[in-house]
Image (cartoon, rainbow, N blue to C red):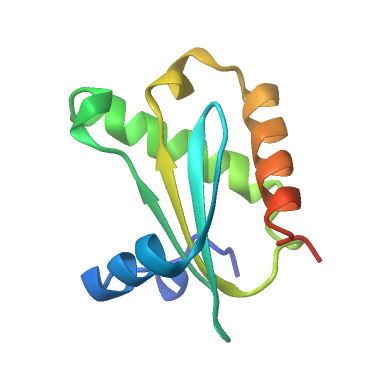
Length: 111
């Protein structure tokens, strides 16, 4: 089962607030990664209205999801939030994968 299925989504506003306040974070050129350890795996992708209209925000979230799928079997369980930055639209997919690799290694989230 993919880590992007409905079972692995992070929905609660309380969880988002907790992750933003007390979780570990790492900034890359494409996104900001937030993590808090947990026994289950939950993932969320966020794109604010600063990125543009709904089409551009959805494209940014799709690109983040595609970049994360390359590391699907490698990261540890916990709650993850990935917040897209405006520079994401200008970066190609290889640079996005490098950003994911760099962020997950710096946060020590790879198995």
